[in-house]
Image (tube, one colour):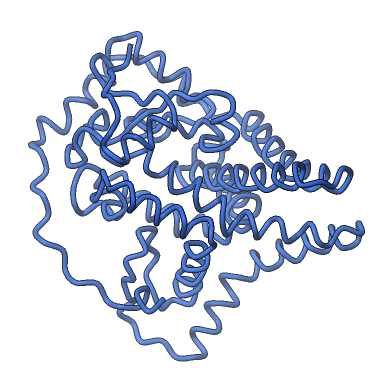
Length: 348
């Protein structure tokens, strides 16, 4: 785990970004359309998604409590991992201030209901994602290290998958997150181990940990207490089993679907550096909850709430803005693309 506390070397000279004319061309195309209806935020839709995601989490605990067998336990683990991913996506929406109508509600609900339960922080995430959107299509994108090596060899992907299902990826991620919360590492979701330049005392580290982890610990304690008082304390272990294993796997595939082995990772046009994936119902219940599969559209107009992304996709498609653009036909296709084995298909 020492890899997380080693200072990283300076990157090579960044790729020279396209000309300003090239950068603005795709934005100019969208400005010619009336997209105002897709920018409207709805507290009703936001609370509906909140209730739906947490309702499935509750259901994942209730079903094995009522019918305990290997099938219900495995189903519970899968649903929990899928909705842990779902919480991260709704946190992402709140980080863009696009889920709820007001900034304050996005900050509060984003932290309490979405970020803290998965040991994240909505404010740090917001700053990080702002950089990602600003610099996407260049080597200074903070997420660039996550995608630059794709496509990978089959054995490389198998090793990554084994680390996910063994819990090793999850343990390393939690360790890195602890160092970030302590202030030792800068917040970095590519986990490159960028050390904070400031020298921190042990007291400062302790204060940072208490301040940053109070709410996540409170929520986890509350979750355990409810299950304990219900007589099913053992069910709490399912949350962490899914978090450390299945959630890591779903997160890896979902991340790869968005930017791995795209037509041109170093082009500012989101039609080239991001990807949309068409999904079936079972993929929504695994890799793609809460409309996260419409990622190209999100990069094109980041303030479109997730509950409008599907309609937004078909709107810009009907206006010819996606003509010839690659689209993934599902997450099996995504895995093939991660390996460089997919047949490239344009939007039809």
